[in-house]
Amino acid sequence: MKHIIVTGGSRGLGLAIVNHLLTQGYKVSACSRTQTPALEVLERNTPYFKWFPCEIGNPKQTSLFVKEACSWAGDSQLWGLINNAGIAKEGVLATFPNIESDALLQVNLNGALYMAREVLRVFLRQNSAGRIINISSIIGSRGYTGLAAYSASKAGLDGLTRALARENGRRNITVNSIAPGYLDTEMSSTLSAKKRDQIIRRTPMNRLGTVEDITPAISFLLSNDADFITGQTLTIDGGITN
Image 1: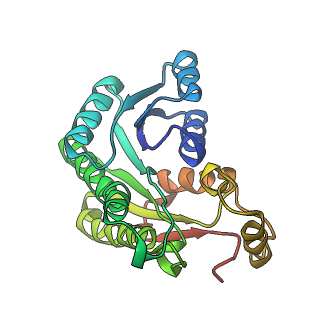
Image 2: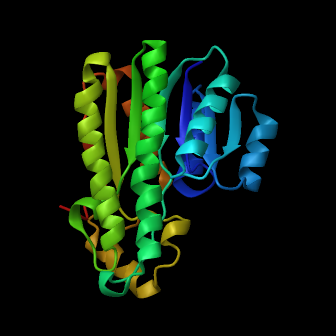
């Protein structure tokens, strides 16, 4: 069985990714700051899933998590990393506290960079091909009022994707981003009804996205069918950025 690491796998899109990968026959290890009841159920019901505590953005915890996850996976080859962990905080930059922007960039950008570095080291030790998929956002390419720091973090993540694709292509390691549009998840639950309706009206598909709209793309990018796709950002947004 191939082993996949998923960050931020406790809820929303991350939890959906974990469940989807398990149905696809992968061995999955996931990390988050705290364990949720859904993760507890998964650990009880399948020997192919393991949760680990990790504060994304902390390089020491990241290194320990990857080592422990690979030890748990045993002889299973580490095949992929899904950098999904992220936080979103809203506020115009002129009044946005430094502590908030620093925390956001540390998790969304530095956290993904630290995790990719640890996983790439494993790939090199294995002398194997591999996959890295960064979960970005349409906000990274389009921007949005009140989301300057979040937009910067996701634009940086797409830049990291392109650079790592160039660095590692000769080793048959692909690196890609998936940029979802507005999804009907816990993260979007804070939207006002008016804002939600505006987004839906601007979306050609006339609805918010779901986690099920995203997971098949992850399966594809992990598969051998995507051997020649790297350095790309795949937008899945119902056409709102057209």
